[in-house]
Amino acid sequence: MAFWNLVHLILGYARKLRRHSKACLTLVLILIILYLIPTPRKHYNDPQMFDKFNNESGLDYAIIPNIVHYVIFNNQTIDFITFLSMVSVIKFQKPELIMIHSNIGSLRGYYWDIVQSLLSVTNSSIEFHHTPIPTHVYGQKLSSIYHASDVTRINVLIKHGGIYLDTDSIVLKNLNHFLHFEMVLGWPETEDMGSQILLAHKNARFLRLWLNGYRIYKPTIWYYNAGQYPTEQILEKRPDLVHRVKLKLGVHNILTKLHEDPSWDEWREFYSIHVLARHYPGTEEMNEVSMMTSQSPYAQIYKYVLYETAPYFDIHNVVLKQNLHHWVFKKN
Ligand SMILES: *[C@@H]1O[C@H](CO)[C@@H](O)[C@H](O)[C@H]1NC(C)=O
Ligand SMILES: *[C@@H]1O[C@H](CO)[C@@H](O)[C@H](O)[C@H]1NC(C)=O
Ligand SMILES: *[C@@H]1O[C@H](CO)[C@@H](O)[C@H](O)[C@H]1NC(C)=O
Image (tube, rainbow, N blue to C red; front, side, top):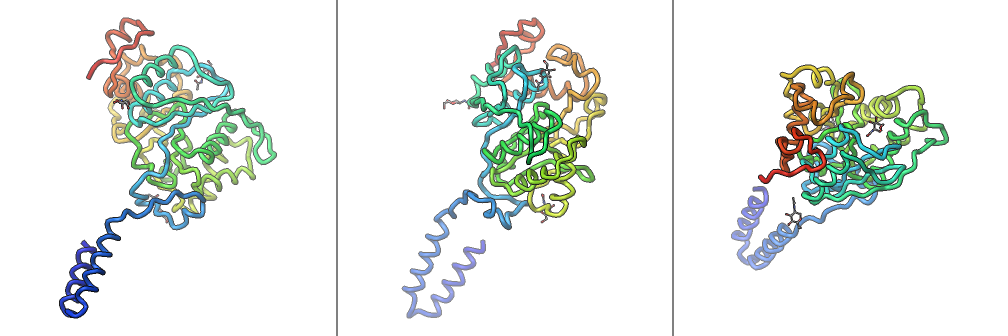
């Protein structure tokens, strides 16, 4: 609209200044040409280029690569919840690439075979990146494999950019519009930010500040460097560094509802959800068979991801007959 108003204005002048009409016409033509040439896309080769980045509206093109990262230490097999996470991201996000950062190498086993058969019908590919478990951060000894994984996810995002997922984060909708920002994370009202799903450009300023926070590493406090420090010392002072998502990345505490309240269906609005399945009593017996008889939102999510979202798994031929190694994809 503004552009055409400008054209009108210029044409108005042109009428007044008949003598200069040729010059004005040329000017209008130049403006039209400039308008039609697309503005060049910035590549953000340097964190400083993000100064004054608009964290509310982002850009009109994606700058975060559609690459999904998992960090899997000391395991050659994946469990049921990791399987569900991978199926969900393959179906909803259709990443170009899934990178598995592991100290062991490739994966194998029953659930992994199913993930691979799903990959053969979508076009995502998988790469393994050999990643030793870090033992220290800024010269201080890391106290657990969990803290080692926390540090690794930041380093992985600094190296590659992309979408980091915990192995118990389930994707429920396509995340593409979040790829237009410098960095996106779940940060619920009155809680610490969540580190279970992170979307970042590799030069995102927050990633460097967060890592730098490990200079004051607190080995005995579970969520200090991963959540409390970056929230209190970085984000509360500089909320413009990230695109904050309060609820819809599902990192807030919904554990009881998720496992006990069959009427809770808010998850249908979410882009992702952190199911914390390994920390809830009873979930260790959950698998593709027991899920079919449960009414919990967790089981509903399982059914939604596997059987209500294409490409489909055929329940009758596959799960119920327990012909488990021959998963068939139902034709749509
Ligand atoms: C790793 O392996 C252990 C033992 O088999 C299992 O309990 C755990 O859930 C696995 N973790 C993942 C992320 O698959
Ligand atoms: C995968 O790629 C092939 C060839 O580029 C294409 O024909 C096919 O439709 C793609 N499949 C999906 C699920 O996108
Ligand atoms: C963007 O940054 C401003 C501070 O400049 C903050 O108040 C706002 O909540 C942020 N918006 C989002 C969506 O993160």
